[in-house]
Image 1: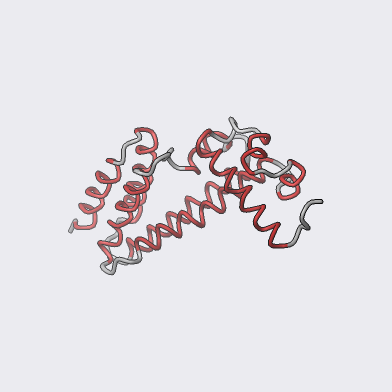
Image 2: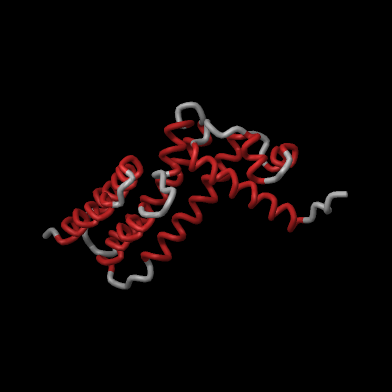
Length: 188
């Protein structure tokens, strides 16, 4: 007889499902991963999976939302350890370089999701835009604290570094973008 489905069991099952789906989607691509692969990786029956998320698109959105909270939270925790506003902005690029160097780095999960599903899924496109707007707001707040009117180009440097590193598999774009951001911040 299976264990009763307590709120804690449901929470743990949902987290296991999201962990499995996120790892598979990021490693292989969303469209390449079927729900049977998610079932196998999560250890949950399909009926349970569909009880949490009625469709794959719902699961993709939940994965992106949870990843957004973790990703931007980790970035903020790193950047906000730095006191000097200029150095805070540059710390963004240091954090990006560390992320780009992680084993299994495959670029931006939101750009990847948009490339696969953005044209056909309004809810995925909306979630990708929400993440990019929130990341833009983070960068803008940190840059505005320096007094330099360069938030937009610094954001574009960060986004460009992410995309370039994802394609090249090399963390160097973070270092190049950092140097360019420093030049922008120091311009008269």
